[in-house]
Image (tube, rainbow, N blue to C red):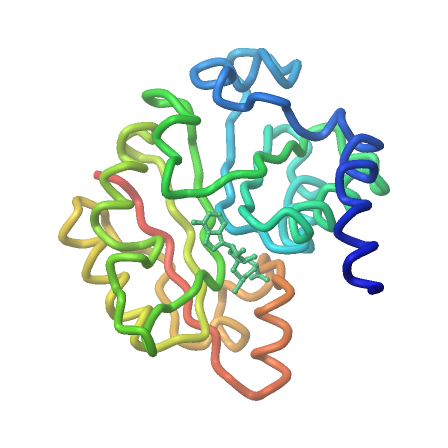
Length: 216
Ligand SMILES: C[S@@+](CC[C@H](N)C(=O)[O-])C[C@H]1O[C@@H](n2cnc3c(N)ncnc32)[C@H](O)[C@@H]1O
């Protein structure tokens, strides 16, 4: 009953934060800076599967000169992220309620400067590697809107997904940098912002794996 009511409330609560999202984000393809009120030379950063928004809100706050767009497919989850951004009054953070399977419809050539994929579903138990957001077919889609020198920063708790992703990046024309299998005890930790899932896994004593793949 409680959950039913919460679900019915989603449209009303989304409406209260309407400045954070677009009725038809597909129309912004090639025009994200303009649509969000930013100058043509502002870097665009894109996060896929942002969850409840801990990472994207802190990233947008720490990088005020960047236009940060966060995508999430689950309505109640993206709502939590949107409300967080609304509460923090972050001027540079916007959301897409949508599925990364269709990402090529949302962004145009050279539109994105840096991407973030954090703790995406590993699809190991179901043995469906083609569904992983770092599978080569996804990387091909991303290459349609990032440019040489653009980065994809990737973090996971899952060894199998990490090894798979390193291979996919390398075989898709990316150079691997900042690679670590123990992020929280590495030189990269001082600038690291922890996601919700990252904190949960760290609390369980699981080492966090991370890499930044640069398109050659
Ligand atoms: C395991 S959670 C991680 C959330 C967050 N990145 C974190 O690290 O705390 C994965 C998230 O990605 C979202 N997701 C999975 N596949 C997606 C897709 N194809 N498009 C958009 N979001 C997706 C899920 O709904 C979920 O919220």
